[in-house]
Length: 395
Image (cartoon, rainbow, N blue to C red; front, side, top):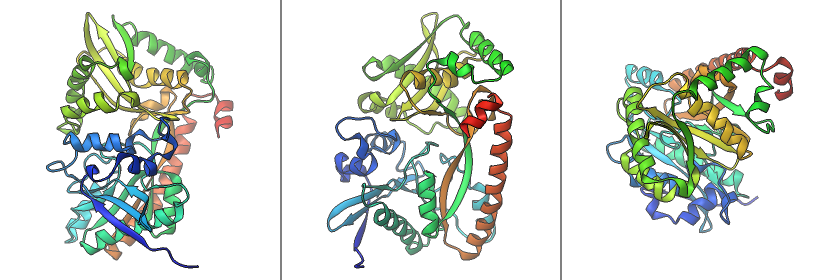
């Protein structure tokens, strides 16, 4: 069988590639105006990060987008970045970095194929339909070769799909299994129908919690598309700044990102805001995919009991049911989500490490970690709020 020659190129900016060409690889299902499966790998979202200065010089996320061509035709792309730290990734390798440097190595810079600041599962090796094997292999080999040629410590693909994890493992990368809490829609007609799947005690707890949250003395509204106004973003920016400063020291996204989002991402967004006494006091930002609602950021200027749970988790369930979405991904971490109907769900990443000895050590660690994650998912699922018969049906 004749081997096909693939050309790998690097782009330092998405301005170097037409949006239609990138999206033909990233979201071919969105041709004709349909909603993309993953809003975060679209040209418009990644460009918003770049144009707003949320990635680029001074951020530790320097774009080096991979492109793969076969006979002059673009067959695959990947959002790749040179990283000078491990912030904004949510697949934590800080211990790897410390161990690598204690052993005399230099862990940073490294290469990262990811959506910056976004712990949401989706394709990372964005290959045109029909080129899955060829394009995936080319992008992986291209990334590894770039890391090796430049004597970089490692290459990481974070929050990839399980299918990509299996393909990557066949190509010699190491698989890491972690977990998040996701809500799954089993054809519920409304929130009360979802509640009937819970045990009696948990059902009462959620009803009480929603009632407590909604008694804060104001109203809750959801805005998307043309209903979003600049005043909504100004309010949410204040909330986001407060949360970002407390969580990460400084917010990852710039104020300009939200201005660009207003212009080019409004149809991908559902912004839930709480109003009290004529003021916006809290908000939760969600992105909408073809099958998934992605909870991303939350913040507030007033603290009210259970309002965080209402805006981030229960309103998200309402939106998903209303739009017939299959699931809600509520972001990284947070075992408190379990009691609210969000079950532990595996997430995946792929890793290549330049040093063979260190790679062997990490490989052994990842095997043990996968076993621990499997056990944790099993135990947490048992402690979930669902009736036993419902859990067995879902499994």
